[in-house]
Image: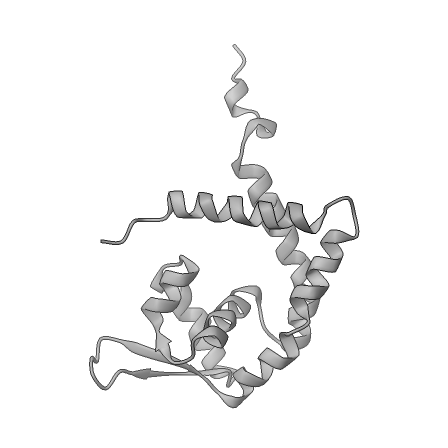
Length: 149
């Protein structure tokens, strides 16, 4: 008996997983120059948009668990990229803020998206196709994300 549904080539998850790993691998040389990892880059992008926000807001926006993001934040604090402080209004909340070094990394990282796009667009993929793919992936993320009440 053949189980066609179990063939790797018939899975949606595998090409998403493989593409994600390969794209992150392409980010590595750029991020190494900044001394950060890809998860740290994601945290920084959130903080560059909105500085001084709670750990819970970071986890919500990155669709990660607190126990996943806490070690990343601790390492970034040790590196002098951000600070973590208990909220004055609610001790249960931890506020994450960029340091001057964290803000400087934004300037240094500004060219990364363009370099990444250039690498992807040098082949047969067109910008419109990448944009459509991104929109479709956000639809999948929205469909699979837990709904907030």
